[in-house]
Image (cartoon, rainbow, N blue to C red; front, top):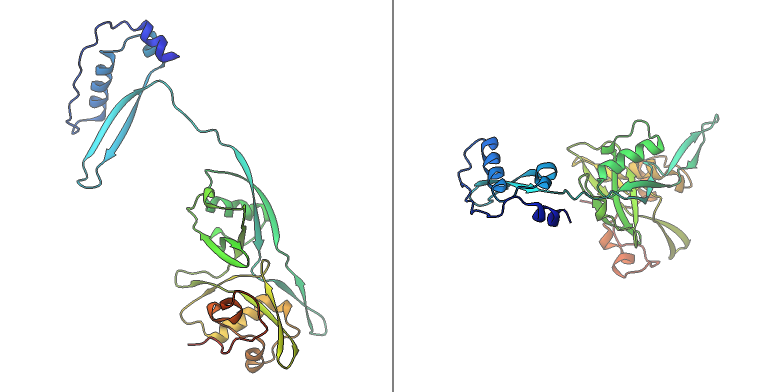
Length: 285
């Protein structure tokens, strides 16, 4: 509508041809005035006087590196309307259970349940913003955004791990859960390693049942190149102690209680279902 009013009120009846110089090696103020004078030579109305502005745009050639600047007139600026939405995040603490020591020296465990947090978010937010908001919402003292790992999970499998710069548009919550794991002791030298936990319960000498600890179990450990298989087992007992009937008294007992396998080698994974067959060998170097 304003464009039509401008044309009706345009005081310039004969519009001249205006040629712009391609010399960009001049101050912006000089180039901007040249563009504006060229625009005013063809457009002169009260709409231009009161409502028009000038926008600088820069284009850089990726091949030769040549920079081209343009100063274009504008009448309006389109701005997005930020719509607040809500997303659900499932927070899993570093340890599945907290150890409680009794006066007699015995140990018991309190379950650390998975916490479901409903956060108000905007689509222009990043994963790092969600981490900060989650720390504030749950009052996680001593926890930094670097200690958190945000990932999508479906059917017990991690489908995607999100980087801090990722947009919330990348999160699919229609068919997947969005998990936030607390992974402490991460360093530049450490590696983020995913674990899947299966609890074996022996029915008889040749038969086992398998329970997949899916959502509430810690899934990521921070390991270094010096971490041994025995260190991994100790970490598992430390973080998952509540699922064991007793604490291991020595390394031999620990080795019999915890087995570590490459996930793709597990028969239950290769066959696409749980079986009662124990994996043939333990993963090692």
